[in-house]
Image 1 (tube, rainbow, N blue to C red):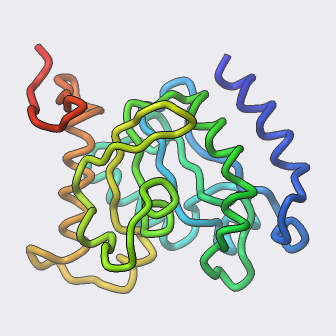
Image 2 (tube, helix red, strand yellow):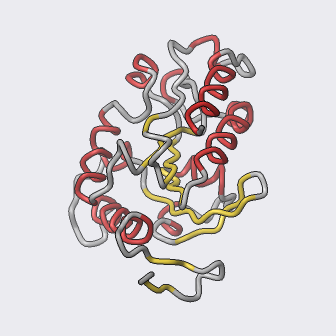
Length: 214
């Protein structure tokens, strides 16, 4: 049922010409992951060159690094995640997508999230964070990452956590206690424990109590 609904959304997305990115794309980059088993939706920024050529998100250098972090955390990309981006087409020169471009794609993202109905959402990078959790200029992803956030998509509430984008981790190889790589590994371990383990952690809506299901 989910696959059939998503194919309808995909067909509409692939014919979309709502923004200028449609003129320069090679492929629409719709999603990756198994919608039947995915418990978490991971939202990135935008497709890069490799993604544009293959039509699959997170398959370039940044995606390969993300795969390593997911594997180390015990998270299956194929079974646990449904991966999308804030826009479906590659912005020229891999620039950050504009507000207009993101707005043109938002209906597709919202539909995907609604169909998957995830237990939680991972906001991968600052662009995804700001799209779903508006912040002021002083509030960076460094201040919000690793925290469980409440977001609303089309009237439905979800728990979300922001993590550093793997493209950022490619530029910082430090493994110090407070380095982005170490913090990302911790964040993914928290996500695994909260929503992908045998004894899931339940976080109440007020985020006041955390307890294990028996």
